[in-house]
Length: 352
Image (cartoon, rainbow, N blue to C red):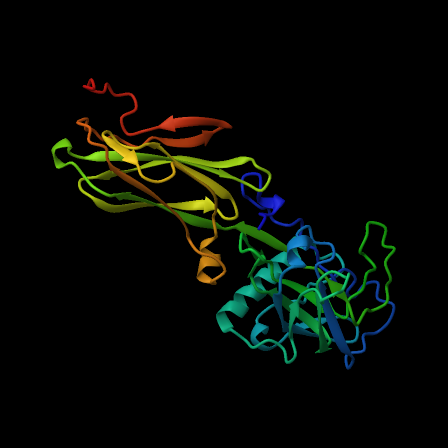
């Protein structure tokens, strides 16, 4: 499994561009003719121009539509149903993208609060057809003319390393492409079967790593003993994207585990025992390599398991005792720094 290159640097994904408003560009001012308000429309949702199309083509994305307004023959809109409190009276070809976004936000807030049912036959799954070379898409048919709120459901990518959260937005049926470019060269004919895209932001997922130390036997006269582990995580290109050091401290034989949370999902980690405790020796390999970090969401979905490694140690017959504290490493402006509880303090001399 490979983690997407889009989350390789910093494991952050930005909002996918400026919100486009398909079908809302012309409305009433440049229409070539009257709207056939009795016509049945279709709405096709595609991933063709999305920057996340590679992921989207491997996903199944549920999309629902809700009618928020009726339209008359001259392109005037009147809010309807659960959305009747909205005001579309000032809509024109000069309505800005920011104003449309605000209307879309209002409509989504109403939908969440009122929980209206989607339009009959108003649901579709956007996915790529098996064997097809065309991008993933889905078409909703038999929709009445009017204004619709388009709501794609948040969906994980194939390996659950990213959750895509889609922006609900308004679209008009019929639409047109008259103002689809800076020169107004699109068609001014009403389009009763428009094609629209998806707008999304990605939320990189994280997972856990459990490190277990098994101490097979223990010399009580030497007191507590500590074991230290170094964790290095790399992305699919081999870049180090995670580094940490943790420890366990034991007061007797048996198992003890430490759980690291928030590791970037999809990376592989190497865990090395860098200190095996005074008077104790490893009874297992000192390095465990190639451990895949599944996201918590993937584990919940049964796609993978929480990553875990185990190290075993035993008393070696020595008479040296001692335990320590854990150093924590973090990335400060591109430079690995060290922080630990006793930093800046004078430590007592150690007797060997």
